[in-house]
Image (cartoon, rainbow, N blue to C red; front, side):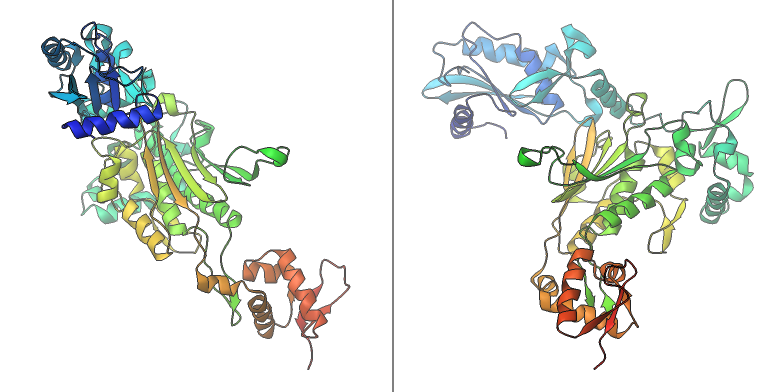
Length: 502
């Protein structure tokens, strides 16, 4: 928040005093000996983050105004700093504002557009002079972060269509490839019909030619249509983990317990990884449903259509630069949320606010995105469709599916290094809570048995979404009441149950 009035300044200083330090949006400089040279680093950091305000004339030790600062000299030095000390030059709002009857010089530093970052201190150079604001301090950008900024400047990432020299064309899945070619010809208004298969693949950068004339699959080709891309890139996969609690850490008396209930490496081409991720999630999350009138009504903790969109987006838009090839897409299921994260933040000129305001798309991996538009998949419910639409509809679909499930919108976090979308655990509705009452579970068990000759504990558990132990407890009560009778030995794993004869 820019500081433009005495009231704004007093409020900002009060917040810093309460915290006992500078804040991410504000930096105090006493400037009692003149304009501090380190201010250039702060200017760079503000411009590379979310903007911020540099305040000269207030002590960062006791948050009191400094007497007799050279206002004119500091104001002039600040103007020179934002125009000449950093690259690119900034258009900062510089003004003199009174604080406790003493003048201070305030510079509101704007955030640079993504296409112009990083802002760096000229005398230090781009590598050593690029800073970012974290907490109350300025920190140098890593080489990886600088590279991502430069990638945004160029407006085109070039890593998805790099040829994979160790791979051969036979490493592409023949069925996926044939289906892709057919879809391309059906959706290109006749243009693809004029090209042979090989030329079509080359034009889409699915394959590329090496210096010796040999053709190889590209990263995009392998990921979209390869038989097993992880043969060449073992960590370009999805890692699914189901944790026991709300954190990856185990604390207190449970320190010796397992940190997670399930952990799976999901490999294969992108269509396979998406579906296998949904299967892993489906079997690890609860399905808020029980049998009603002999029929199961399924209400999962997280709507699978929304999850599918998030996983597809993570795989399509993730960073495929060499520095990120060792980082998988992570799907972490906690007791209170589901997190899906990928290396590389939002690409191009888009921001989190843009995504929240409207559907938008800006492809880091343009060739991969185009290939995936014509790749079909069969979902876990038997339906089919294309892996992605790439029309900026991903987040609107996610929001719509969550709203339909009476769930909150997702939380979105993006930095240079990571993009993460978080789904909060679905709250049980009052009506659904009634379904889980003891009486209703018993009624549902008897309703199921009324439409089946008999059922095992596991069949009733699968049909109801309840644990086998819960089902056994209710069966015992129903047997005591004479409503249900067991078939077979009491301790047999094959024991079945049916309605008792009346």
